[in-house]
Image (cartoon, rainbow, N blue to C red; front, side, top):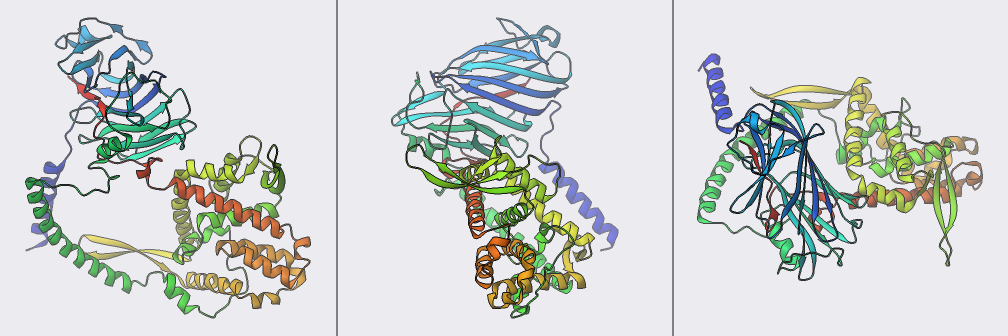
Length: 568
């Protein structure tokens, strides 16, 4: 078979696949959907929708409000680009586009109602839709909860971006509210007393937007109730979701599909295994960066006694540190705390806390506000300054709470830190990226060390060996105290700053008097960075416990509400 024939066959397969698996195309589109829900004391909710749309066909937009479970819709209003539409008491879905232009109304159905408004002129629109729903919060046997479907993707004009906030008469906190999001891929969390959630992908036909909130105590006075307990409601909502740990009960049809799927997966696995085997051999021949245990093994009992990298910030070598499991995000913070104290940007203070029983507490005073810059050090400073608040005094709990609420920002910093470092190491001639062909149509990228890169990487590992071997530190004389502070900054990257500082004090008792960083300062930094790490880890924990986090694309059973519709 010649090359031209092969190419024709591949093109045909791609075209057929595109025809089979392509998403249905809609002339009407929605760029963004933003929902703001204000829960009232009586359990009702005032819903405000902002829909940014581009419309090229049909005569009206409508929202299906069915499965309300006794709830009622009132105070329905619509505006377009801030201009209120006129309410039409008897809405005719068969009227012309011209007749519906500038008007809105409601249609009663067998299961509920539909909220409708005219499209008017084709093109861009920004609709503000508001309505009140009674009984959104329900009384359960042992608590109160909201379990509401705000949007249904099937047959609808699905938004490319989605965002929702829910507030109540009292602030929602981790102590009084449990939260889950169903039907869409994204995140959900509590921030400043409100629920916030967003989608990380455009919504599709099989998506929906369902939120479950369960409340401790009796913050509401609901007019409607359910015979379920909170645990029963949670279990129903989690069925077929990524939150659930229960096995799915397969039907006969499911079994057949599963059987065929296993066969296809088996064949696919053979192909994948061959490709992986081939890829491994190709990569091995390209001499990739030697990492982890192998790198440490080749540098065992070897020492490098000077700072291994002086061309820029310590974050420049983040990619290399990552390969030997060093340089955690909290380690960089600890290193920068030392640097900032050395440079006079922060000050360690002891404050008394408590009205009756006084307790001394360490705080950090920041000597400057937010700074410009997209480099890692500037970003980390701005994180700490943001956590400190308007008084520029950072407390341990403040840092932990900030990290918990803003874990996504920290995730982004970690990802960018490695990419930033890789790009820099390539540009400075320490690393190189090679595109290697695995098979005819499959390439892979291999990252290798240059000769300078091999030397730098070995020096970093050998320098850690040197810092850990305290018996060698007595080579440093008293006049090098300023150098010892640099050693401590680097020791933080390896998580051994306290141990190294203690050894300095034993070797040279005057160290704490001559250095800007005392042992007490180092202990304070360790406490703050540990608190930051705990807050970050808490923020990234599984959302299965109702504490927020990632949403589930499936699940959401037992909910009320509708949100279907589209255009017609």
